[in-house]
Image (cartoon, rainbow, N blue to C red):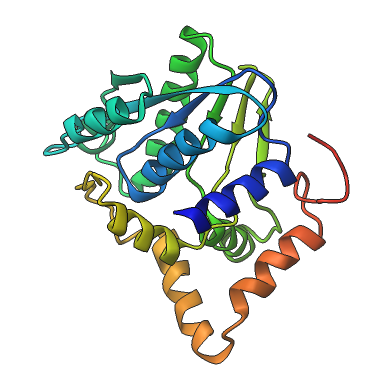
Amino acid sequence: MQHILGLVRRCVEDYHMIAPDDRIAVGVSGGKDSLLTLVALAQLRRFYPIPFTLEAITLEMGMPGMDFSPVAELCEKLEVPYQRIQVPVYQIVFEERKEKNPCSLCAKMRRGSLNTALIERGIHKIALGHHYDDAIETLLMNLLFEGRIGCFQPVTYLDRTDVTQIRPLLYCHEDEIRRTVEKLQLPVVHNPCPADGSSRRQEIKELIGQLEKTYPDLKQKLFGGIQRYPLYGWNLEQDER
């Protein structure tokens, strides 16, 4: 966890993610990435020189069999206020519309519901659980499927909602996130999504795994390329945030 905290702090400082007296929400899906984001920021809050407060929000999308009670217990232990919001994403995407490619609509509905929840609560900053591997996969997805070079930003300001998204796990590799979550025995909530394991992102993840057998430093080169290119919002030498 100390290693993860070091990476999170460096990422937060590199991209100026936290300002004095920020009120930061963590979008907790129940997956390993969002849970570690929550725990890392809760621990960072104790010693970080810039004061900020933290709370957690979960969108309960109607997926059958998902129980967030253990997450509520974790939030209580961390002394982080926790709110669970019911949104009928599963019903609309899978039962009513029966989408053949549900990921795009699901993501759009989740973003909209989350932004609405933030606005209603007067929160203007949210921490998301995207990590090192997510950035690389997103770069390749945009290049291979859309023919463009692009990736989400470490800090994204949404002017329509006056909400800023931050991604403090960007320096953390997925395998070290998984190991840390297992070691801490965090209460991961299994997502029984029918599309799980068959998405385009999964295709890219498997492609990267194959390429790494020949090019072991592939991820390092690609992530470095994102920062050096630089893609908008990624350049460490310019303060555009």
